[in-house]
Length: 272
Ligand SMILES: Nc1ncnc2c1ncn2[C@@H]1O[C@H](COP(=O)(O)OP(=O)(O)O)[C@@H](O)[C@H]1O
Ligand SMILES: [Mg+2]
Image (cartoon, rainbow, N blue to C red):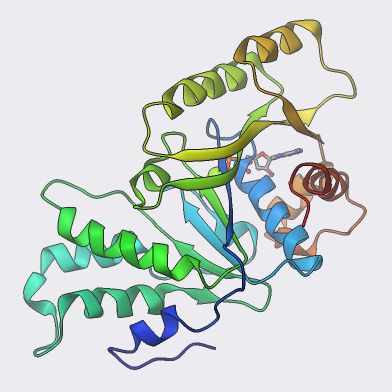
């Protein structure tokens, strides 16, 4: 458990250093296609196979990565930013504002046995947020070195990822359901990647709710995008049950269709 007094942030950032550089896995795609589900199952697999420590980052303002893993989120980085902008004089007297903001982010970091979770929350409103954003982005960058894996559930525009100072992603999974509309969204994201300040080492497509055989029309559209299909996740009725029962996806049985499919995909495309 991390309990630090104000001003202790610098220590934490250098605490749990992992020996090698952390691997960043990110997800992007249209809303509702299954990004958060797959991200949760990737976190589950990494954790179960001992590929820890893991930092889960919920970077979709409309997202619920915490919820799918049974975690109640109280504070987001967006809340911290908004509160600070509303009352910049609220920094305790004698304290540097950078340290103050970093301490708040540290407190917003949710620590669980299997992984830690940071929720970015809403995007900024009107006004100049550059200074605050720089502080927050720098801090998340430094925080990252404490983990072997960082798993980022993004919104379609990938704002958070592209704004980070060290814009690197080791594996970008573009998620589509089994629909041409889902694929077209991926095509746009893929085209947009060029204009982002982001180095993507590897990328490919995950198809969710995939049938046993993909149609020629679908495969032709994939060909036109020019990216490989890295994973096929079948329609898994257990996901609906868990959603209805508000159960964490971390508790899905090991032999669930989606759990097995994500395990296979990671072993093949992102080996330890
Ligand atoms: N492979 C799948 N089989 C069945 N239902 C799925 C599958 N993937 C996602 N879902 C369901 O679809 C809905 C949207 O998934 P979600 O992961 O929240 O999408 P996104 O994060 O892309 O908006 C959820 O109710 C989820 O349970
Ligand atoms: Mg989502």
